[in-house]
Length: 188
Image (cartoon, rainbow, N blue to C red):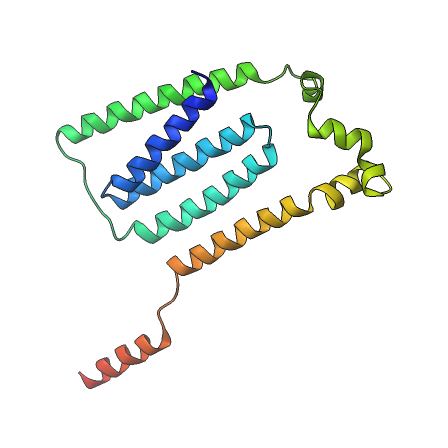
């Protein structure tokens, strides 16, 4: 079983736990774990820019979600559940440690270009024919303004949706509700 398949299985398990658990904070932590695994999967697929974007958006969303739910769902762990939680935590740390060691074994040696390992990558094509295909003056301009426009637009759309979701969760109370509370307070 390849490492990518293991990542997919862990993502599915994390998503199922996030859906089925009744504890909101545990659900948010599982969603965060799935997002972290997605960013690792993006690294395996050769998209480090998407991995970085995923990590940033995931971190911001987790902060907002934890802030929104921390006061609503206060639970305490007692009895045998404490041992079970510790066992699951240690097992997950060991799994991530093994995955991390395997990932670093697959990375090229320090100083070796990734393009030397993979000859038919899009970056090789961009460097070889980018300026002439886009009509740009240099390769950097061709990459940024020619090839990456839609990718950057997608990243901005993801961040915009994350901000809208955060605002929906943490929205301020409506003025009408505040006026009703003030009138009730005056009536008492």
